[in-house]
Length: 297
View (tube, helix red, strand yellow):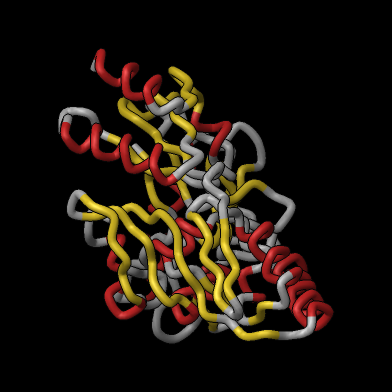
């Protein structure tokens, strides 16, 4: 453990000790992380990963904007590596490479300014490129993986370029969920378009989200993945669960697919709410919906 500080100093990686994870998750819950490091470059991230993987007794997790994460009330007895300062990008004709920590809002503005179209549907999703790639994020029947040329990743102890097919993208899935892969960045193939047309489409998608979703509330996004048949949110609504509250966690009255923090919620409140909804749906329909949020513990 004493060597950690040498590595952090050697590669000029800023860090904090006993950092509250509630400050780094969109739902504002979570205990303290023993180590919390900010990486700004690919080299910093890779060197830190190599060190941590060579010292298997130190557990670690990658964190971007913390928008699809539920952090344990007990905190994280290990190393949190925050990538949201890794935001470099490079445009080449109708292609753009962007590092994993770039926020999707900022990414959308860069795309608009460069007249690159195709990913407007991502505008308004409050995550990062890395998280979006891992989850194959999407909206309005479109997914980020459809536009990927390759993903730059750290896997099997080295930096690799994984082509779109190798990423095994599916609905809210990628190979990064099944294999020990850390996303460093991604290259996208897009189309040229007028900046005003891109901006108008981004605004249209954002407006649709703000009208239908509790956009101004503390949430981790959609609580459950969709399934065959009715949307999970509609099933929850039909079961009369809108507005149900457990501690500080509430099923949104605006959109039943979201669980929001109405004040003082804990991770346990959210977990109990998820389990309660799962049981109600199982009793009524005979299946258990799969959570979309990832538990950090």
